[in-house]
Image (cartoon, rainbow, N blue to C red; front, side, top):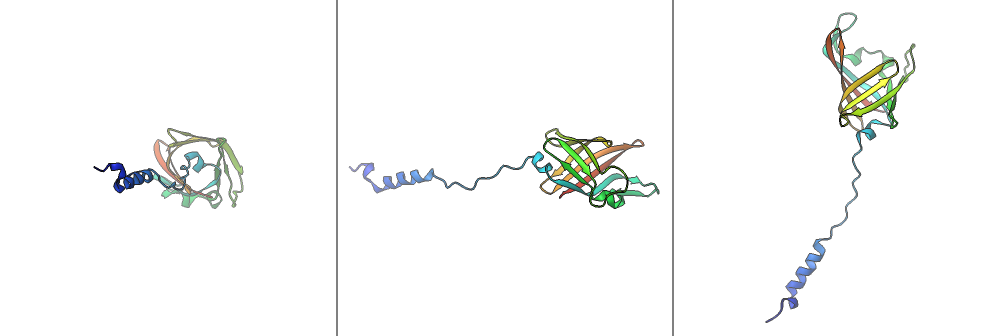
Length: 160
């Protein structure tokens, strides 16, 4: 009787088992950027601002598109966040005639990076729900109570 060690079938099986455990190393996948990585080191420019329910203007018109009613010199302002947890709101290219050219402050993420808190000089402290944060877009939601009415604002920024 022939032993199994002498059969070509066993040799083929052993050889196949040797190579089955080897895989080609694929390209290393970089870890996804953190929310802090996405937020910091670049400027953000406001691209849209809406409010719900509609907010009355001084003329009595009800508006939901706040951005359309903003002065041009406020539409191009830039918000900057850095890793040291400081931030600044700076005038853009079309500067408003009066007022400071920059508001300095601090920022922090809370609740697993789903809430962004800011505290800017003279503008005060604010808290925003982070609706979207990507390589190109920052979308925040905040609530302001004015004359007993809760207004929900959604701010959409584009990375510059």
